[in-house]
Amino acid sequence: MENLQEVVIQGIGGSPGICIGKAYLVDRGVDVVQQYLLLDFELDDEIERFKSAVNQATKEMDDIIATVPAEFSEQLYILETHKVMLKDKKLYDKTCKMIETKKINAEWALKKVSAQIRRMFNDMTDPYFRERGNDVTHVTDRIMHNLIGNREHEQIQDINKRVILVARDLSPAETSQIQLNKIQGFITELGGKTSHTSIIARTLQVPAIVGLAGATELLKNDSIIIVDGTQGVLILNPSEDSLIAYAEKKVIDETRRKRMIRHSAKPARTPDGIQKKVMGNIELLEEVVSVLDHGGDGIGLYRTEFLYMASNELPTEDQLFENYKEVIDLMSPLPVTIRTLDINGDKQVRALKEKDESNPALGLRAIRYCLKRPDVFKTQLRAILRAAYYGNVRLMLPMISGVQEIIAAKTILAQTAEELARENIPCDPHLELGIMIEVPSAAILADLMANHVHFFSIGTNDLIQYSLAIDRGNHDVAHLFKPLHPAILRLVKIVSEAAHKKGIKLFMCGEMAADPFNVPLLLALGINEFSMNPPSIPAVKSMIRQIDTSNMDIFLDKVLKQESSDAIIKVVQDTYGDIFQETIRL
Ligand code: PEP
Ligand code: MG
Image (cartoon, rainbow, N blue to C red; front, top):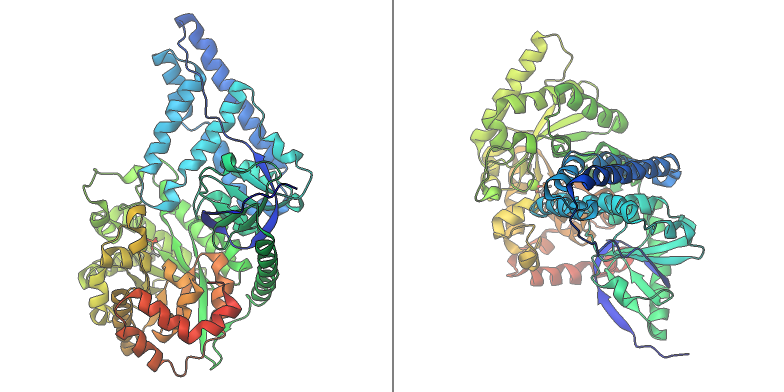
């Protein structure tokens, strides 16, 4: 047998776990599209050809939606969204128009329009929305394949051996055609941690590496590979030593994970009997199931922007109410923390766009916007107050930077509750009110803020961005985005001391709370409730169950004396290394 050289390549870990097997390549996408000019009399036929390619794509989506296996039912909304996008004005009407005005063929017009829409998404700094640009690619690829008569996606259904799927990108429609018993894992060239391939792979608990540039060029069908989805590492042509090492790791990982999932519904109680809550962050109603499946103790952060971003028009009070009530009903009796609109900055809402800001992260974002537009704010508050009548709801205000903003928001909240009472509409005016601590001034003023609210929730994604002056969406400074930076820990300590002194609850809902490595420190810093992406819940719960909190002062003192995050990591590792060995792979 040919002795091939082992190659190790780093990508992005999309879904944790290890698999070892043969690569199977599907779909290199539609890169080469011909451009040609048309004569006037050909234009109508060309537009018709485009429309029938879209109709064909719609029919294909219908067929896929009708036959989606049960294990993908959580992802149905993605397929429905893609179906709607096929006829979205921005794509459909614009392509027809471009064929007509530029007198070009449908493929070329579609390619240009699709690139314009993708550019719009790429300009957003929020990774979730930036990756929605990939949805546009999936939708246009489907139409394009119909235009040029290429039926590549049938390959996935044809797979008849247990393989590791390698693709430029996988659309949700393609992924939903996969028979799970034939796929061990995924590798894609595109995508990031929040792309659909990652979301689906995590939902299915299949290891995945995404963002692995050049994978479809480098790998051949039947190449032997190891996928380490936890570390985002691909090993091509593994040596015998690597094969043995990873086979062992795989067994250990799977045993660990099974144990964690088995226990995920149980409470997160420390060995010294302190009960903590581990909650889920969601963006969509559909994610509630995942929070429950992973043993979440409630919703610690419902990011409500999505309903506003999904359409050209603002959602009505009733639409918002129905959506919130459904989340509350599904979670009942567990708590649901609804955050009011956190738009602008990196999350633009077309229907509310006023003007371009030169520095959007420091602009009219979140609570600032809501206080400027009390009409928009009140509509959402009415929906939340009404929904709160039906369950256990907390209201949370984002981006608070000073006490005045809390007072102003509370005044509008009280007016809104009075209006509802006058109209005899059932609502809960006494719901708990909290603020996110994500601006350094809020952390510094925590003692004053604590007089006005029932809880704080530390949003580390923004707290780190604003304290360390690191744009959270900028790859070039990503290496400086350090949750364990001494300044961040000191800010968390200030907030914690203020909260405990005033007897209000302290939560953390930024990504920092999702990393089991941070758990000992966050327990030492007095966090009562952790909230995170649902798949991280079991590991964090498992870690909490192993950390005795009765004697953490010396540890915390030592950590807070360190001058760098590397030094802090070392102290944590030296103190809790044995427990980490059992629970997470570093
Ligand atoms: C945060 O800033 O940490 C947070 C949880 O909010 P978002 O990621 O939605 O800005
Ligand atoms: Mg934030």
